[in-house]
Image (cartoon, rainbow, N blue to C red; front, top):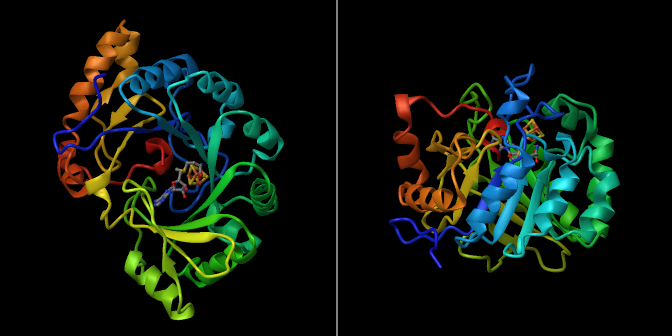
Length: 331
Ligand code: SAM
Ligand code: SF4
């Protein structure tokens, strides 16, 4: 079998697929208050196109897919798409990243499908602060979802973007949530993907600073073994039911073991979060490409995967700064 291997010997086994650019929230670190310029519906990949792209990639060794957006559950019949994707016998794992505001009623269905982990994004445990961050008043729904997911068969991870002066005082509250709950909280370094660019902050909350704060409160945290390609460095506290991790998304110390590619909701293929898209797969399909054409395309573009996120950023066409919204990229 041909496999997707880049020129540094990294094998690609993981696809992050954005199913929409639309979202029901307006998180400050992701987009401006008025939202982003969403694309015309016909520019979005159809579910059939997404299924086909995923199938071809899975025949080249991709065995794990994460569905993201925008908010995946705002797209009509997303659960139907999950059912469709579950028929792909080459996929071992289908995971979803969601803000959780719309999913409570779908949890039992998700348990019945081949869904592995839900990454629930929640940046505050106070409804007031949550509303300030997301610019929407849906904390109660999201927290109810968190509790229901924790009790479900699905694996639960929380994504918490650490925002200087906004939720850094809640880091320890999030750690305490793992005392009695079987979930993994992952603190993510904030990146400038908010539709505007780098936000001015008094302090830089990077991996080291987050870990230092936690270590100052807990003397006996233990590193956990993680997959080589894991984006987070993970830890546990003795006798705590859950665990925590830190994702050095912006300091980019995880690139050596990267096994991921991304496809945006408009079909733009990205070898790296920090590149500005290398090929539009949607247009290629709509021009009549066969599955064999798609295979050859994927094999060749993966060869161009940059060594790390700094090189990807430097190679951006027009030298434009990284500032597009995570909702467009597919986080
Ligand atoms: N709407 C869904 C959600 O929020 O989970 C899925 C899409 S969202 C773009 C995916 C992930 O990207 C979320 O966990 C979000 O917190 C994260 N994210 C968005 N903007 C970010 C930024 N500027 N820096 C770091 N993480 C970001
Ligand atoms: Fe929407 Fe997710 Fe971006 Fe928040 S982080 S605005 S929930 S896409």
